[in-house]
Length: 420
Image (tube, rainbow, N blue to C red; front, side):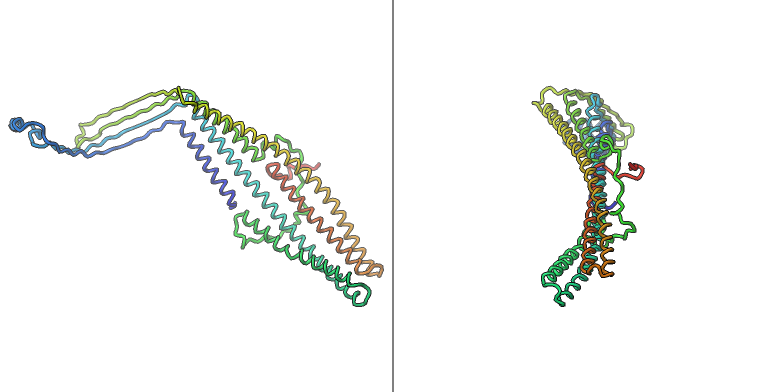
């Protein structure tokens, strides 16, 4: 839930959904309300002659017009309402909204794909860690057995019953086994740290809990009865490609709509509510306009935009076909690989059972004096070697099941995997 990649994908999804809402909002009208206040201060030289002003001065109703300078101070308050709407008569805005919505759907599917990949990667690293634990146990048995064999060879060498060649050979095998064992702890810790990072935890404090069940030895059954149609409907990358194709188709429709007329309606209302405290001086003015715009000559811009949108749509269709073919190939490869590894696991399990039985028989024969200690220990080493091969096979089988999980576009439950 705290994986950074998933968090990034979700953030991009929020952005895409917001863009889709923005495109939908463009289908409706817009309206705004504004208020203004003005302070008017004037101080002008009176253009009336002095003689005329002298005559006006005798009239008490002449007011300030008889003064040498004309001064006016007033406070004005006005309120305005504006609205605009472009009717979507030919579907251009709807096409833009559809394109944004399908782009958001594609981003959502990319988020699902990221979750799928992260889940598969966690499963893969988990299987690596468990396989490394099994390899460590097998390596410890190998080293213990080789040390016993080395002591046995050393005693025979001291007694003169063998040569330095056999002694050096067993020491070389022991050193190689210890060298192989020395890197296993680092391999497991690297896998555990990878799981911590994928889960969004601090690697230094993350610990892989013990598992009461050997998950490698008991993998889930591969699903049966899957169809190409189900793959198309479930796999996130295919769903994302389909949504992208729909988005480009809507963008092409929007580009073609540029050839058609565009109509716009505008309304403007302006009213004066108060002039210098005099509420009687009020007024209202409104203006309604309707306009139409028809493209006549654009020097090929509209057609070039249409051609580009058409090319993008064709590219999206080709990418969808390529993704579909790759998805079908991924499913076939995963199914075939899983079946082959399952068959190999059956043979290796039989081989391990036979090798362990042989090692047990050799130990009994050694106790009764019919086999040497070297032969008994060698039989045990052969059994451990077969076990290591089985561990590698089970890891590869688990990884192939994870690849099948990704190829099918998701996991499966017991209800979806009927017994054949």
